[in-house]
Length: 226
Image 1 (cartoon, rainbow, N blue to C red):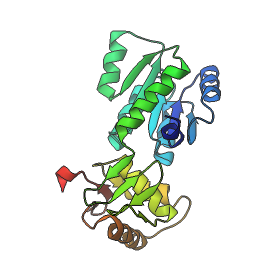
Image 2: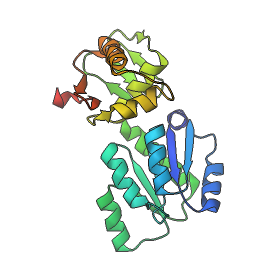
Image 3: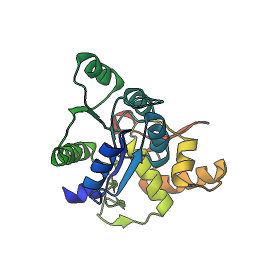
Image 4: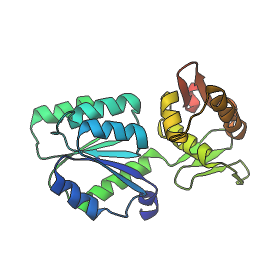
């Protein structure tokens, strides 16, 4: 359990400073990264910047509430689990959470052990080992690309970041701007350089796995789509 949790980046969105402080202190050091945001607007911006594995959010928050933020997150990455921590259990909010695409709805107060167990279950279901179907597989937790003979294929830091981003959003188009922000943080990069970069990765994992959506971005498809 600890190994999987240690590989996760979690986004926690909460406008109550006391709750945010208590939760963040209680789970400090459990995850690879814990990103904090104080409302849905900031949460959405940090989601785009950090590409977390799992989002935990309150509902009632200023500027953008948790459900609207969830809708926008799901439009970017439908596979990213969103866990709601709410003080409300009325039917309208529960139905709203379902419509928004919330994966788990928990009523406050929630015990830390219970929350960690739920995160762990989501992480296991997400599948950190991605099989590309040609004998090559990518282990997101270990950041390793393995060939059919079980030998690790060398990857640069940027190649690792690119594969993590696309495998977290399997079958979902990842826009050029998201790729630039995630892989070339704070650096300028040309479209030609990105194409050359992607070609190098295709040579390592298989030429047909990474789909180019002309003028928009890239995605990795499941076996069913090939």
